[in-house]
Amino acid sequence: MIILAHLVDKSLVEVTASGGRYRLLETIREFALERLSIDDDAQAVLSRRDRYFVELAERARSAFGTSANGKWFDRLQHEVDNLRAVMSRAIAEHEYGTGLRLGAALSMFWWFRGYLGEGQRRLAELVGAAEGSGEIERFPAALRELGILTGEVSDVAAGRAYLDRYLAHARTSDDKAGVAAALFYFGMWATYEEDLGAARRCFEESLELARGCGDWLAVTVGLMHFALVAHFEGDHAMANSLVDEGVARARDERVDMQLAVGLVIRRRMLI
Image 1: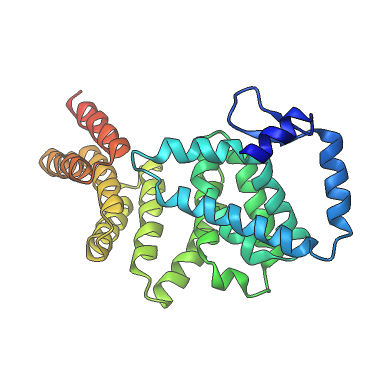
Image 2: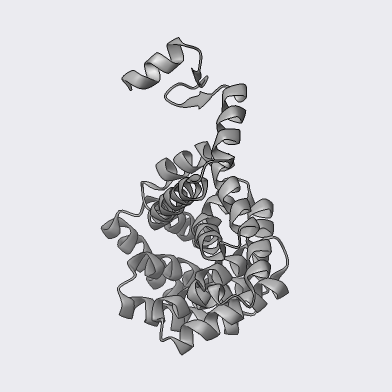
């Protein structure tokens, strides 16, 4: 901090308007990038930068749905340009594993912070570039998240195609949590399309697998959506039982976002 203060005093670094963050003046930044480009250690420096932002995004993703979710999304919001730079370099330098990991970790941030279209395009570009490299098989979560984002930008058929590829990989590798996640989204889309029988089957299997894995966030979310399906089917006793269990689970796990969702669903079922 003392060094930063000296740099600010010498007008080499400036403090952002919001405070607490620093940035180089544009001329200094351009000079530094030029010097870095001819430095033998440039690739190592950029790789360390990329690794830092991948790990940051993955930590943020692990907090999704918890009370810390907003704090992590705020932190990612400050780094949007850096995150874009990492993804662009991943394609340019054929660092597909880095890009796929980052893209998968950022999907919910993109969705909930208004970058849905951009995020879907960037991840689709990465997956397309990585085809045949073997990296998609190493990081199949990118297919799952691309399927989810694609479905949410109104191309459900294309979203299903990506998610089908992910589901096949998850079943082959006996990744029960992965199968549960894919089936949840298939169930959600079937609900949107009013194919309640298909939605029920997806949610039943997804919940069974999530319970077996001890993935209580997935269980909580699945209970809420299954409750809506039961409600639409006219099975109000089951709907009430499911949403009550979901609300109780959300309270036990202190998952504030899902608790709020459950209370809204419970209220809707009373209308």
